[in-house]
Length: 168
Image 1 (cartoon, rainbow, N blue to C red):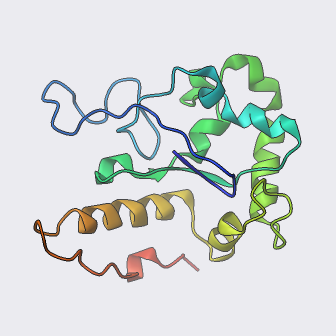
Image 2 (image 1 turned 90 degrees about the horizontal axis):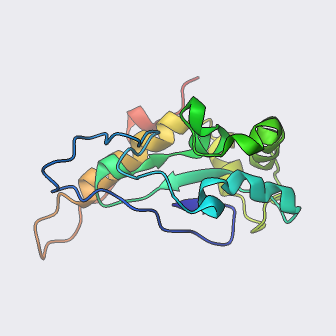
């Protein structure tokens, strides 16, 4: 998983795309990139609770994979309790509104100072009007095009298409 505007990433377990017994999306997985299993490590599963540390916010959580099914914006999963289709433990339910406010506030910060890494990735995506679904669609299509190159051939040049343009 890649956290935009944070200073590190973490690994989660993905189902291998050739595993014949696994139907996609696998049971227990959800969100924009259902290839990933929910993390068993409480620090990863409850990552939104790190927003309480006061070191700055992240703006999006992205699943990144060579497989289009493993690509997408999974931010909402990290801002909802597991019982509601998210990842975070119910012990943090009372703080979810505040966590969501911090994430959305960081997306609206043109200085990047509210982000832990001091960067503007989430601000740029929000300013361009990209929804989580549009981010997911672009990532999945890029992974499909990237993986479509024959061995030894250059990857096809990825381009922004009309479907990627924010509505409005």
